[in-house]
Structures are given as C-alpha cells and as structure tokens.
Length: 201
Ligand code: SF4
Ligand code: SF4
Image 1: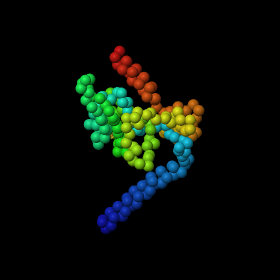
Image 2: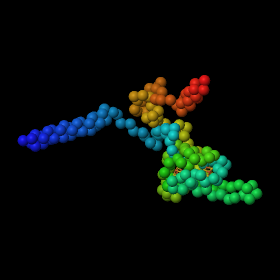
Image 3: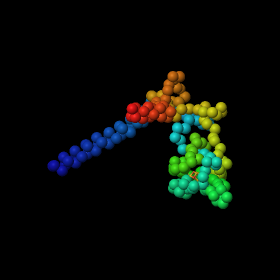
Image 4: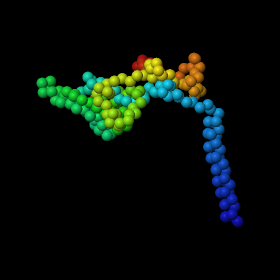
C-alpha cells in the first residue's frame, strides 16, 4: 500500500514538473509572438560594431621593433615576422610582416602584448573570399584602415542593442532624443579620473 502511494506521489510530482517546464518553454514562445521582427537589410543597412569589436587587425610597420612577442603570445604562433639584423645600426630591421586571417582566432593576445602598440583591432568583419589564401594579409594590406560603417554614404548605420535607449529593441524606430543606455567610454574615463582625484584629496 505504502509503495503504491509513493508511486502515485512521484507520478504527481513529475507531472507537475513537466507541466512547469512546458509552461516555461511556452512563455518564451508567447513572449516572442508579441515582438516585431527586426531585420537588418544588409548590405544596405549595417549594425555599428561595438567599441571593443575584434575585427581584422591593423598593423603599423614603422612602429614594429621585430621583437616577436606577438608570435610567442599567439596560441598558434601565427604572425610571421621577417627581419634581418643590421650590423651597422646594431638592431633588427623589419622586412615583412603577415598574419593569416583564415587561421587567426581573433583572441587579441598579439594586440594586447605588443610593446609598441603597432597592432590594433579594426571593425572590419567582411573578410569572405573565394580563395582562403587571400586571407593571408601582408604588412601593406594590414596597414589599410577600413571604411567605418558610420562614414559610408552607401550604408545606413543601425545602432546595436547595447547602444539603444532603455526599452527600445528596434534600431529602425528610435525616439529623436533617445540616448544609449550606459556611459560612453570617454564618460567612463572622466568618471574614473574624478574618482582618482577624490581618493587623492
Ligand atoms: S609584438 Fe609588436 S613590435 Fe613586436 S614583432 Fe610583434 S608587431 Fe612587432
Ligand atoms: S589575434 Fe590571437 S590568433 Fe590572431 S594572430 Fe593575434 S594572437 Fe594569434
């Protein structure tokens, strides 16, 4: 008798949990039924990449000291630093630099650890090619800066979710006075400087 009652109680408990999980799943479905679809009409419209977006890396040839730190910190030793030792000047002379973006995982180690800051991320993400070898960019190709989404007259820039005012989900219909949620990096910096000054006083 006791065993039977326990089976009934377990059955009721599992039925209740199953009902709850189905309800949770359906609540997400119903929530989405109330929203309008947001379609970015690429390539006529493009989202503005976020401030720390890791796109194709930019390289400044004149700043590179051929130290090869970028190669050592890269998880796959990807950057190719081709240098020669100049006997007269007693220092390394960079001849050629390249990164294969078909293999790069955009982890950012090379950018982070480069002692002269000659590497930096750009917002370029349109890297598709018909031949993967075309993604092996040399110092000339890496020295080119991409066109910003906001500067391109052919493109309508749309704000990403992080830049939208609170409660707004569709970047097509923004209130004219709608400022983004949160602070701009420059405002965060100003605040940090003020905080440091307050601590010093
Ligand atoms: S870490 Fe920077 S300076 Fe050193 S070789 Fe790489 S790109 Fe050049
Ligand atoms: S981003 Fe990462 S994987 Fe790509 S070259 Fe730099 S360190 Fe290597």
